[in-house]
Amino acid sequence: MKKRLAMVLALSMVSVSLLAGCGKQESGADEKKDDKKTESKAYEEKKAGDTFRVGFDQDFPPMGFVGDDGEYTGFDLELAQEVCERLELEFVPKPIAWDSKDAELESGGIDCIWNGFTMNGREDNYTWSDPYLNNKQVFVVRENSGIDSEKDLEGKVVDVQTDSSAQEALEDNQELTATFGNLQVIPDYNTGFMELESGAADAVAMDIVVASYQIEKRDAAFKILDKEIAAEEYGIGFAKGNEALRDQVQKALEEMAADGTMAKISEKWFGEDITTIGK
Image (spheres, rainbow, N blue to C red):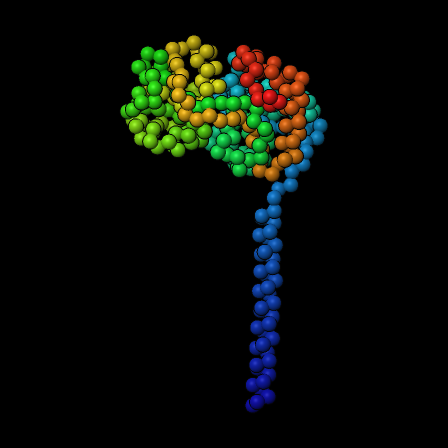
């Protein structure tokens, strides 16, 4: 009886040991899987002939938009195209929905976000180029609206583009937005200007670079309020950790600034050199 009991106990101990061993192996395998998930994606430099896919909002003139000839054009796209020529890359402008930009970048659908892209408040979300342009967020109103300051926006309808830095700035300023009749989120600024013209909106919060261009091109009776909502800088956003491509593009931009190419492109679109690289 004692021998049988001893044998049963011995077999039980072996079974427990085997199960524990299996548990450790499975746990180790799970840990390896988790490690693979947390490993950072490896990025390499682009080589001559590779494609360079630039994500941009096609309704954001003068940075990126559809020209009268049906082709994509704009200040940022011209800069990107010049960079591609210098790096011997195939330039592929890819219009994206602005609120899907992160998904496009993470999936590899685009190589960067280059379209009047505000760095401020997003510093830790991307690998950035150096800032190349200063910008402000401002209010645009109809010239004869009687709106001359932020105080006059009380009870008014204010448009702002979805997922934009203007939206973020206004949402951070609840003291101001609480006075609005409605803060209306729109898909793009062309919609904002149409609503401003029709009277469906009383003001549009947007980038001063874009606002100034739109007012001039539309030859419409709009004005920009003096007080800015926020000051910021534009940069090129790459996937987090993609220093290899960022460094290639940054070097090309610095060369363009040094030889005057960047200034010429700026003068074409803005009438003056408003770029900041190398200054």
